[in-house]
Image (cartoon, rainbow, N blue to C red; front, side, top):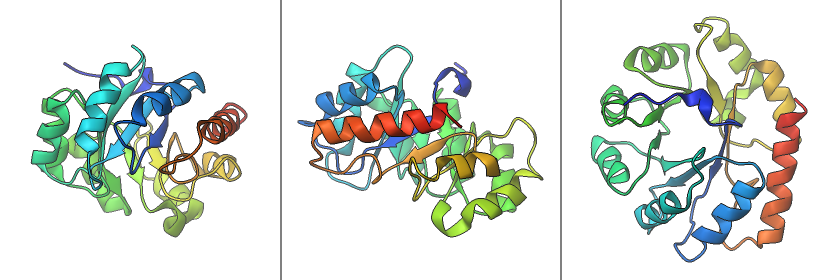
Amino acid sequence: MTMDIDQYQPPLVAILRGLTVAEAPAVAQTLFASGFRLLEVPLNRPGALDCIARLSSLAYPDALVGGGTMTSVEHVDAVHAVGGRLMVAPNFDAAVIRRARALGMLAVPGVATPTEALAALAAGADALKWFPAEALGPGGLRSVKTILPPHARVWPVGGISAGNLAEWVRAGADGFGIGGRLYEPGIALADLEVRARELFAAWSAR
């Protein structure tokens, strides 16, 4: 099964680091109602797989749930087994990309150089996670985009906010992963909704 990354709009990934199973339904519904369609639960926190399983059972038909910080083939298998269909990694590992694609998942590996970006695309990446964005900067992204094929999607992650999203779009960003500027463990749902709608509005006005 081949998935089309462009069917999941907007290309804004909510990074839910530290999410608990108890919080998951309300957080997901708040984000879905605010326009988000891509949810990621990083695996380097306790209970991540249980959260992915819960979110997968709640997802809208046009939404996608998966795991982040997926650095091994075993991570890919574990996330897929609980219903996750999005693979996000902080690094480039061709074996991880190939396994995700073989299972019909969308693969978004982390890259920080032109060499990694081109190698990840050659391995089958659906989009590239430009990470850590705050260290690499919009100027670095602008330069790298000039050597990538036109179809390449690059999603900066790290330090993205409603205030700087437009600057990154001008530098060539095709989407984003947003963590602490959107979700923090224990955040009030009203605050989460405000942040989500601000980010969605910033994307719509780009």
